[in-house]
Length: 183
Image (cartoon, rainbow, N blue to C red; front, side):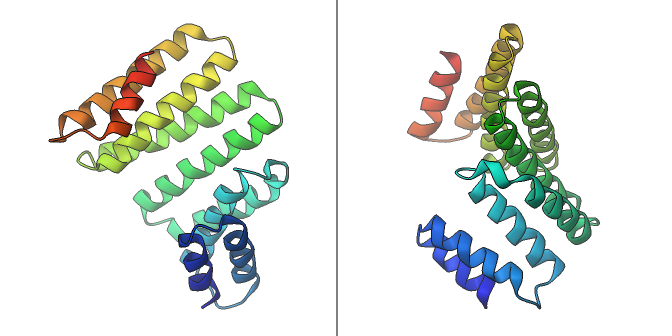
């Protein structure tokens, strides 16, 4: 019930109270391995947007939970690991370690590309791949790898254009992503 309550709070848009409720749910007993892994990852994603200093312990716990919960479910494990790599990139960004930001961004991109290969008709995964290309491009720019950044942006354009080509009326946000990546 505590986990469901946390999800309701998060759905209402209150990230702060939702994070607190997730911590409360994780402290209680009776969560399945699946619920624990999901809650730990969700909490880290929330924390990585604001409190990036205290992520390392949570990352280690989440990695263990993900392996335990989804060792036999490749798609869920890949999705969770790619999201966790995004959290790592945010943490390294806070710590001003550009090389590790780039490494984690590329690892996240690799995971999302594998998911896209598994589910080629999923526009949500394709959009995530495109955004991952853009994040990796920003990290590459930060490391002075301008030609790599340009290549990653071009890959993002190709992904976004493919998604737009499948839509009858392309989403304005998608058109903005294409224009932004091209610019």
